[in-house]
Every structure is written in C-alpha cells, then in structure tokens.
Length: 296
Image (tube, rainbow, N blue to C red; front, side, top):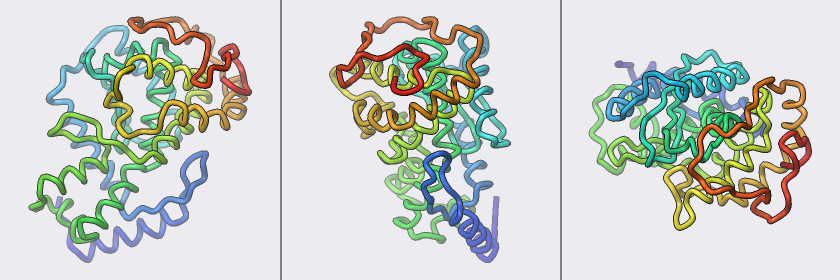
C-alpha cells in the first residue's frame, strides 16, 4: 500500500483530531493517538496471518467451539464492527492469548488450565479484546513513532520501504503487542494492562459471565508460574496489583452480570491440570460466592 506524504499527513492529522476527544471505554482516560484506525486494522490482519502461519492452529473440536462462542459474546458487547476472528493454537507450553488491532484473537491451549472454566476464559479473552478496543496498540505505536522519527517512520511503515534496524522493528512489533521473530508477546505498559483488566471484566459481565472470575484467573496464573513470570505476565502488574485495581469495579461489573447472567454453567471445570488456588484471594481474605456483586 502506497500513500503520498501529503495524504499521509492529512490522514494522521484527521486521526489526531478525532482521537483527541476519544476516551478509553469504562475508564474514561483521554488517549493520545496519531495512527489511523484503518491502518492499525490492516497491520493487525496481516500480522495475524503471519504469526499463525508458524503455529499449529486447531481446526475443529469442542475447545475451538468454546473459544468462538465466548469470543462472539464478548465482541458483541464492544459495539465495534471489526472483522472478528478467533483461533485456537495447539501449544500446551504457551500460557498465552492475544488480540491484534481489528479484533484478531488467538488463544493457546496452554492458557486453558489457567482459565479452568468458560468464565475464566471469558475474562482472558475480554482482557485481550480490551487492548484492541482501547486502541492500546495505536497509542503505543504513537509513542514508538516519536522515538523513530514521527511521521517519517510512519510513512516508511506504510510504504513498506523501511530500512529499520532489528531493534527498531522490534519496537514497532512491540507496539502491536507481538514480537514475531522472538516468538513472545511483548508487554503493553502496566497502565494498559490494568486498563484491559477492567475492560475485560466489564465485557465478560455484560456477556453473562461472573466477573469475580477475573480474580480467580490471576490466582491460578500465579500457581501456573510459581518460580517465574510467564510470557503472559512479562513486566506486567503483579497479581495483587491487578486484583486491587479490579476490586473497585466489581460492584458495577456485578450489576451487569446480574442483568445478563447466562443459563449455562460457566463455572464448570473444563480444563484441569493446575492445583487448586483455594478459596482465598491474594490478600488471604475469603472470597465470596461467584455471584457476588460487591467483591470477588
């Protein structure tokens, strides 16, 4: 795709005017962004295909059906008309899930025991969708473009005539949250991670899943990586910090859940393999029942 400098500047200028008034869902944070949404969605689609080409993608089965069902329910809550896609990757050693700009979602089988049940998976997927809907990649790319030279770097990216160094290319991939060559998911900022937690909890509640399972997911994630930090948590907030931030939103999320509760048993264990984290949260306080609308 080629675009003239004049056209590029006009597109970026228009995007700036629009995003200057935009707010992140639920948190209401004002967000800086110089990158047109259409460009981010295009990058997301091409990167999605590239990344999955090197993976063993599951093509059938109940787990894939569950991923798609949950994805569709979560996507419906966003109000975004993305070309949503949901893929399950067969890799039990990868505790991971991600969503690229434009709603391109991938879930690894290694994260399913951490999810444990459909509600847990709804939070994990809701968290990733939160990154996409909040335009975290575009915001991060805006920051990286400042490092790489602003509009000139963006033009090179669009024109596909870039001669960026490996480190600079990694910065651009990091803006998407994905590092293709090194095979890991690069971190969003701690603020973005906490924000995606909140958005994910709200979306899962609106879709009919008990939001307190967000807390349980982080408890199980800690069990899954007792001696280190898995890819999914690289330089992310601690589990305790995440739970504390989510606590402030549980009353509102619980009311959404009460209005939209699914008739399915979304707490039935679907994927085992992890020791039980017990009924206590990271603070050591007993956790109330799943339907609680105040605190998980």
